[in-house]
Amino acid sequence: MEDAIKKLVTTFLSSSKGGENLSSRAFQNLVSKQLGGIMENTNSSAAIKEMQQGLDANNDGKVSFSEYLNLIGYLAKSLSEAETNKNKGASNQEAS
Image 1 (cartoon, rainbow, N blue to C red):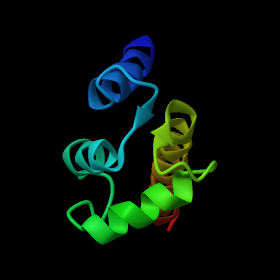
Image 2: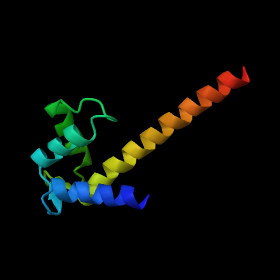
Image 3: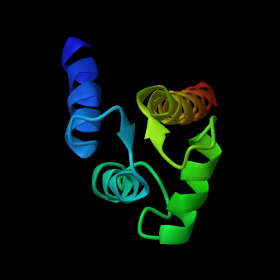
Image 4: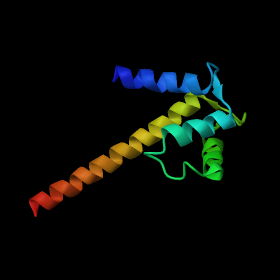
């Protein structure tokens, strides 16, 4: 788990060029390049902009590290729910 946390931090810092926030362009690049395997519409500028606006709690037009972690938490929860549902489906089929 340590490696995963370090990767989250280094990905943010690399994308923000060491800054405290991701610009709109940096956020778009991060989502399209790093999250395409687990998210839909990562090639859509409009969808990514809408996502950014939803994350931007303080409406400064940037994504802070805290706001970025909200996205990561949402994605982790969604993946966990999908895996749980998949495992339940497999268990139900085995029980039948």
